[in-house]
Image (cartoon, rainbow, N blue to C red; front, side, top):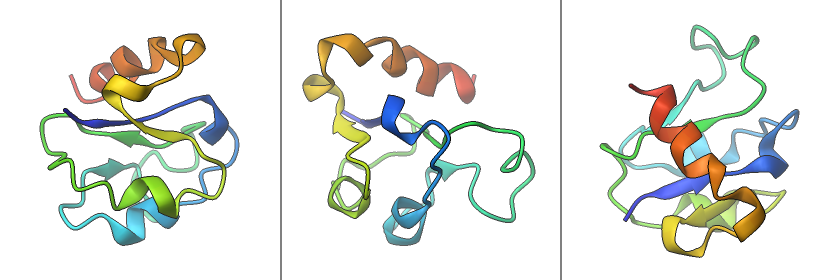
Length: 85
């Protein structure tokens, strides 16, 4: 089950999660195409290995395991997946 980036990331894009991800599945990272235009970061659910390293690294508590995403942010599960479709 992949991790998901939710609403608190919007406008923040701290990218601490990008630095700790061992499989580079969080995009767009700083310096990548689309970083400036994107309002948040996304986790590729097909590449995420569910290690959980990103969750405690997020300073705004925007990252949740898919099964633990708060009800009000469930739409972000599809939003993360659709970003990589």
